[in-house]
Amino acid sequence: MIQLCTTETQFDECYSVLSQLYSDLTQVQFKERISEMSANGYQIVLLRAGNTPVCYCGFITGENFACGRYLYLCELVTIEAYRSRGYGEQMLDWLLHYARDLRIETVHLDSPVTRHQAHKFYMTHGFVQAAYHFELKL
Image 1 (tube, rainbow, N blue to C red):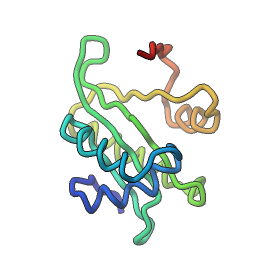
Image 2: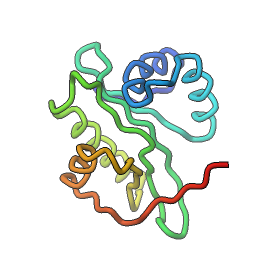
Image 3: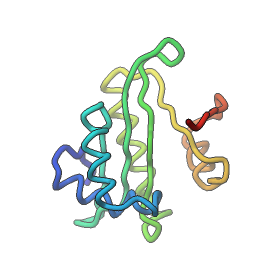
Image 4: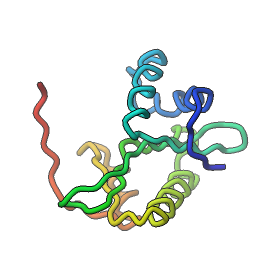
């Protein structure tokens, strides 16, 4: 089952999956940040296998001149023990349908250069490397 998470109880279920990607993130930090982020438009989708949360996606939507109406995938992660079982693909399919329903024009994401399996997954599903991402830490 895939659903948008909107309640604190649902958010609590998400931590176990997201911590697979951000192992240094504590549950207290997660709760603080998720509250603030969701107030600013961050949304979470959670996929469960039975009652077990196995795949998490955090995203935002917006609009700008470069991208038009976009959906930006902030995080997409499946618990390691459940990878390569199609859960990431189910999640991505759900997100693309959701984006089309909102008349979104493009879907974007960033992926660290070392995450080769993730790159393969995204390219297999039609994503292309369209830009370089730059950052300046302050």
